[in-house]
Amino acid sequence: MRNNKLKDVRNAWKHSRIFFGKNKVMMVALGREPSSEYRENLHKVSEHLRGEVGLLFTDRTKEEVDEWFSSFKEVDYARAGNKATYTVSLDMGPLEHFPHSMEPQLRQLGLPTALKKGVVTLLSDYEVCKEGDVLTPEQARVLKLFGYEMAEFKVTIKFLWNSETGEFQKLTGDEEEGEEEEEEEENADISENQ
Image 1 (spheres, rainbow, N blue to C red):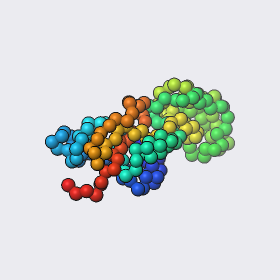
Image 2: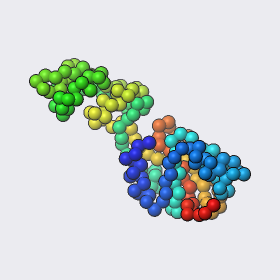
Image 3: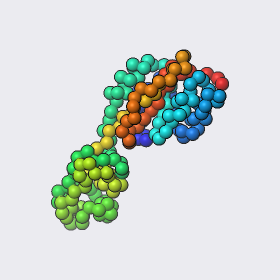
Image 4: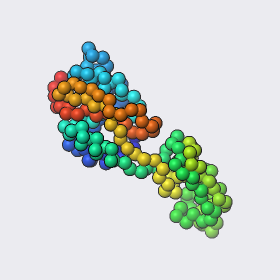
């Protein structure tokens, strides 16, 4: 999960509560089956806690939640395993924005570099990645060092559970891998005692 991006979401939704934790712990808290669920149909939420997911407890309407999260998208640096969205090539020559102490790190990442008169210099043209390539950790690090943002951070609301009616519904189909997901619980009374 991208912590700095989630801070933006948390700040925008201060009036609500967002939970991220171990899925199995959240499953136990909500109830894994009808006989152990905390409230009606919460076991259905538990069944869908897979991968990077969280729970949003809010008093906002479904429409407000959908509108805000469908428009919330931020560009970010790609990580290893993401696909390159475009080809990145670096031209031979001095890399003056890097201090001389970075040269060994750049060389370790596979760039053909050397120090010339105290300036980090790329000795030949270098192709970091091609469009559609699955990025290696080294490629992802090089892209970040050079400021190329290829990933998009967004939260997908997949399910809704209404605390007043106990209704559980699926809102979206399966999304692309690598997207941050979040499950929504609307109108949940989080101060309620067990």
